[in-house]
Amino acid sequence: MTINMGPQHPATHGVLRIVLELDGEVIVKAIPHLGHLHRGVEKLAESKTYHQSIPFTDRLDYTNAMGNNLAYVLAVEKLLGIEVPKRAQYIRVMMAELQRIAAHLIWLGSHALDMGAMTLFFYNFREREQILRMFEEVAGGRLTPTYLRIGGLSKDLPDGIEEKIKAFVQVFPDRVKEYETLLTKNFIWLKRTKGIGILSKENAINWGVTGPTLRGSGVKYDVRKAFPYSSYEQFDFDIPIGSVGDVYDRYIVRLREMEWSNGIVEQVLERLPKGPIIANDPRITLPPKDDVTKDIAPLIRQFKIVSEGFKPPVGEVYASVEASKGELGFYIVSDGSNHPFRFRIRTPSFANLGALPIMIEGGLIADVIASIGSLDIVLGEVDR
Amino acid sequence: MAENNLTINKLKEKFPNSILGEGTFRGESTVTVPKEEIVQICKFLHSDPDLQYHLLTDLCGLDRLPEVPRFEVVYHLCSIKNHQRIRLRVKVGEDEFISSVESIWKSANWYEREAFDLFGILFKNHPDLRRILLWDGFEGHPLRKDYPTQGPDFDKPFVPEV
Image (cartoon, rainbow over all chains, first blue to last red):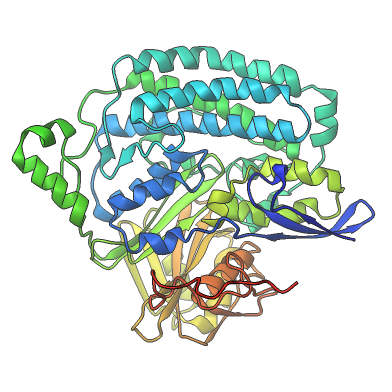
C-alpha cells in the first residue's frame, strides 16, 4: 500500500510530503518530496546588496535566526577581510547560544508533543518566551531579530539586559532537570525512542548529516570546535555525543547541548569586554545611529551604504557556523560588484532530511513521526 | 579553512596532469579539475588514509554566462579527522554530462538533483535525476543567469496531471 504523508501533516514540522510504500505496517520505501516552501532566496539575493540579504537569512531556519545571521555576516566579513571588535564577537556568541537554547526548546516541545507527551510543550515555551523577550529588548524583533550587521551588531546591549540574562542562565539548568524528570526515564518515552530510527556512524557521515543528528551517531564533529569562529576557541565547552544513533541518543545530545550553551552564555557574561560593537570601516559598516541624526557626514555615509552597498574584491568564500540543526554554511562568489554573483546556502536540514529514508525504511509506520521529530528539520531552510 | 598544502601536494603527485588550476583566497584552497576525472579524484580524496575527506559538505552549481563552458560544479569537502576543507571546481558546458559522485557520498544525491533542478546541469550515472525543489511541470532553470528575476512567470496556470 502507498500512503501520502503530508504536506499538511502536523508532525512534518511544515510542509514536507513523504510518500510511504508499506507492507502491512512496515515501511518498504520512503520518498520525501520537497519544495513546497521554496522561495528562491538564492536567486533573490543575487539582485540585492550584501546588507539587504541579512533579513532573508532570518527566514531560513526561523527558529535559529541569530545563528543564521551570524553565518551570513561571517561569510561577507571573510570576503571583505575585516576584523570584528571583541565585544561584538562575544555578544554574537551569546546571542547564538541563547538562540540555540530557544531552538532546542522548540524542538523538544514539538518532538514530545508529536509523541503524545503534551505537558513538556508548556514548560519549554515558558523558557523560550523568556529568551524571545530578551531578544525583543536587544534587537526589537522576536522571531526574526536581524540583529547582526556586516562588521558588528546593529546596536549595543540595552541597560539592564545583562542582569536578566544572568538570572535566566542561573535557573535554566534546573529547568532542564525538570524536563528530564518528565522524559528521560519515562517508560513510554524509552519505548518510543530507544532503538528507533538508527543511523550508523558511517551512514551519517556518508549522507552528509551534521549537527546533533551526527553527534547522536557518535561522531565528534562540531564546527565550533573544528573550525572556530567568532572567538569560540576562548570558551570552555564539550561536545556531547551519543553511541547508538537512535532517536533517544539525539534527544540526550540536544539536552546536554542546551546545558553547554547555557555555560557558554555564562562565560560570555563574566568576560564581556567593553568597546565598540561594530568595525569602523567607512566604506562598509554603518555609522552609529546617534551620529546619523546629528551630523551630515555620517548621514551621507549611511545613505551611500544603504542605497549603493559596497564592492568586495573578486573572490569566493565559504563560511559556516554550527547552527542549532547542524552546519550552516554560506558560499558567496563575488565578481567585484555590489551584489553577490552566487549566493549559495548550505543548510543542515536539507542534508539531514536526505538521510530520513534510511532511518525509517524497514521500521514501523508509527515510528516515522519519532524519526522526523528527532531530525529537527525546518522546512524554511530545506526549501529556501 | 586553513591553507591546505598536503591535499594539493598529494593531488599533484597522484594526478600530475589533471590539476587545471589552483588558488587560495582568504585561506581557502580551490583546485580546478577536469570533468572527466572528477570521480577518480573524489575517490582518491575520500579513501586516502592521510586525507579522509569523508564529508561532502556541499555541492552546488554556478553559471558563468557568457563564458564557455558556462557552468561550474563546486564541491566542498571536509575531513572530519584532520579538520581540513578543500574546494573542487569543475567546468561543464550546457548539455554536457558530468559524472555523479553519488557512489562516493550519498549526500551528493540530493545536491546533484538540486543543481539539475536550478541550473540544468546533467549528471551521468545518477540514480534518480529529477527536480527536487520545483515541481515536475516547471519550465526552465531559475538560477541560470539568463533566467529573468521578474516577468509573467505565472501567465499559464499550472494544472497537475491527476
